[in-house]
Image (cartoon, rainbow, N blue to C red; front, side, top):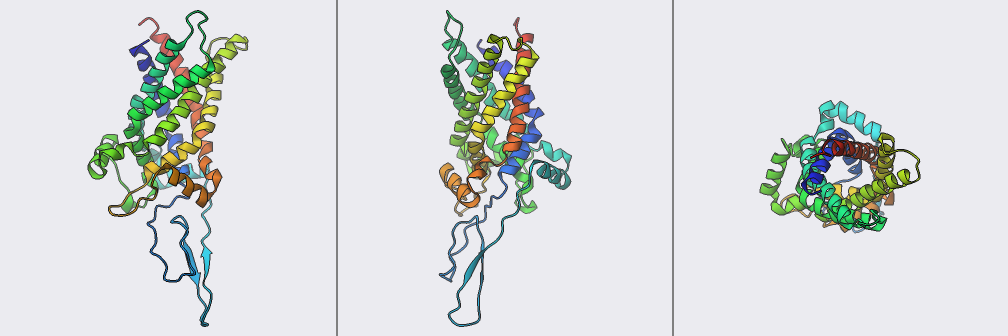
Length: 330
């Protein structure tokens, strides 16, 4: 298929990405709930009070009597807002236009990342398909998705970092906001202020997530679509495409959400000059997140993730099927 597969996949991905961008933004905001990037406090002069981790703050109460015991009191965590509450608060505080913050980065990300993964997956799928039977085992589809996802993520990581930062900027106090004007401004400022390597911050997480998403999403879609057609449940049309794509979106959301949460936090962390970064890496971020917020924190934002993955995957594959029909004779 060559270049044609990249073009088809790119067009479908850009349309799907822009359509579901507000849901992706809400997912990022929810994944960052409960996170704090405050610098580590200085050691307390009182040995009875120990600093456990930056995510927790303690107060002490003292008695006037000599030899009194200082008791650390943990401040209660703020209640976590749901999808609708986050969306309403976003619109009230930042305006309706804020729902499309970072959409330019989404377009660039889909152009680089999704175009690459969709085109490469199609090439590998055709290359590995048995010429006699015309079939491809599920394991081979998954392998093609893993390879395509890894390559696509490596290419699109700078746009991914920029997108996360632009989407999360509004939750910061005005004095701490980066206020990127566009994805080009975001990438150029990151390269100038933090160095070229910052554009690939969290790339290992991006690649792992992309491998999971591409393998589960594309392989699931093809497999479910083939099963529907083979069993004669539906004809090859819109109903089949919607059913197979929504199921594929659910599988992809379940598989990728934990990695997505860690990726979002690592990419969004703000490193002050001379200060220790909030996280030293993906594993450190995962451990601190679980310790401070519990294991279920890795599934923060799952509702908007599935709410976004479902429509995104449906729009992606339905659009892809239509684009393929239009470009069939080219």
